[in-house]
Image (cartoon, rainbow over all chains, first blue to last red; front, side, top):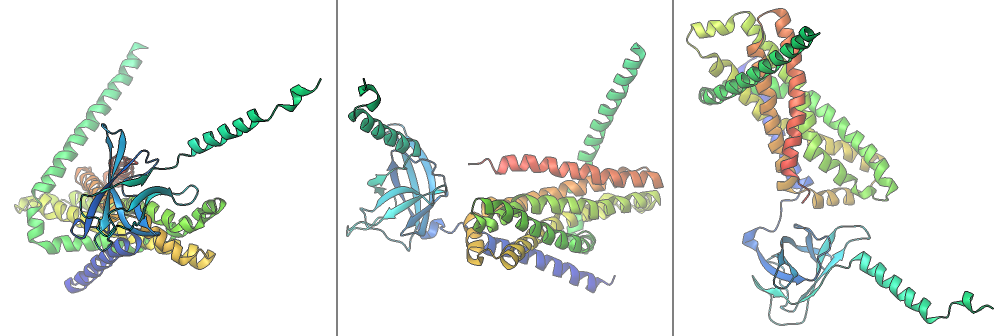
Length: 163
Length: 264
């Protein structure tokens, strides 16, 4: 085969391959967005993080504004320390609260930020003071059963009162 | 009785020693290929020729099978996801399974049978017709002139082929899921984008396919180079290439996957 024809086909092949990679990178996947240059990190302590994972989304009003970058256990406070990286175009008041929520009944867990009313804004390295940990389904069921049990104890059992 | 057991043990021992020998020789061969790779980058048209014969000529089979694998994934995935009312996640299912596993692995298996067997047969015949000896007579190192360009051509082609396979498969899944069945198009793409990470999924898939390309080609080249210079020898070597490299791809896939995705 002539060299120019061969070069043409190989060039076409490489270009198509790179285009496929680009398609995968841009259309199928998302570049991990929030790079260090255009973001800031804040910390939040939770009593229970449930099934929260690293790279879980941080949402405010349902919009993804950042990602969870690190989860540690603080062995003096016995609490989970979660590091959030937020895009620098999203500014939040200093008294913003964080809660761990679940999307849907069985969906993934994410952190929801609720803006406060402070005039000071959060900056890099700050700590979120108001937090609400994950709701544990077992606790809820336990509470429910417990309250049902109390109801049962308050009312006299009808079977025994019969002669 | 005792003689029979001794004979069996002897045969087992001979097999083990033989396979360790072959493994060692193949490893030495691999390092020799790497050592003599310099000339093939200085004379890059040799590599381009090999990209053509192993990459461009494999395009049709890769694209067509990618499309069909994606379409089947779309159909089967829809069937299963529908029972949980989660058919919007079809895009996630199709793209993650293609980008992480099926793209690199199936493309490598096809590559082994399409290009690997051709490489073995070509080099085996070169040896049988004494072209390799002729090169040595002319003081041209056959590893630098024949083996290394083929190795690099395949290593460059493989990730491109795998990416094309995955892209084509996702297109196939889109065709079946969105166009044919009628899954919501916005949910299909947006859930896919939310779930697929560039580093975690796509880059790891590319790394896998580069490794598979290297594994398949080293096996194909070694089998060709090592084949007895007879018609029967070359045919056996070609068969061995396809079997060994397919098994090697699957084994390496497990090893790489266990390093890349620990389910964090």
